[in-house]
Amino acid sequence: MAVGDGVQNVKVGDRVVIPHGVFSWAEKVIAPAEETIVLPPEIDPQQASMLSINPPAAALLLEEFVSLKPGDWIVQNAANSGVGRAVIVFAKQKGLRTINIVRRPELIGELKDIGADIVLLAGPSTAAEANRATGGSLARLALDGVAGDATERCCEIVGWNAKIICYAAPTREPIKVNPLGLGGQARFNPPVLHVLPGTLAKIPEKIRTAAAIVVSHQLRGPIAAVYPARRFQQALAHALRGGKVLLDFVDES
Image (cartoon, rainbow, N blue to C red; front, top):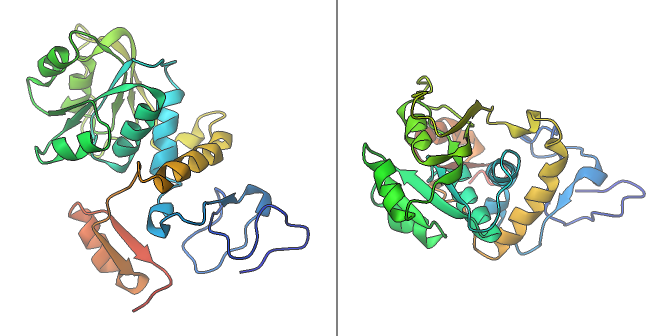
């Protein structure tokens, strides 16, 4: 590693997140120093490797669509995803309360441990259970990372002035919304939030905030396995089975 003449913000040995647009699937890259994000030296490198994807998306989803204040409720499905877990932690930091929908009962305690207020199993009674759990308070923001029937379930939990943001559709099912039961404004947004006007410039700040939370052990992405790059086929097969895996481009042992 080396730095160019006149570089002041980063030094040899710093652990950094390279700027958006710099190709990262390589052992060495050249990046503009002024856009490089220096991380705390004590940060876990595996957790740091995931900072530029899910945490900024989670932070922007909480800020870009609805003006939320402490005490407000939000609801999200895909709550066990990388984005969903980061949403829980960021929401807690802001004093927001979360209703989290999952599909496996063993996730309930796990998500509550990281700060989730309410965790419910997806099903026909989810909306009624959410209403009982919040004492009748409706969510002002719904984050839909599933689509299909899951979108309609979110619509049943939000109030009339809420927004439902569908940021991903891994099921590839049509978004299902009953117009007569719609409690908010449905809006589809691509999962890569930097395409929205003005958000790209906000991402470095979100990464720095997330890094500090990772260092404090409040935010951690679960990792099922780490594979050397030469075993990318096994890593891909593992990921497709539902495990979150990392590729190590340095250690080929």
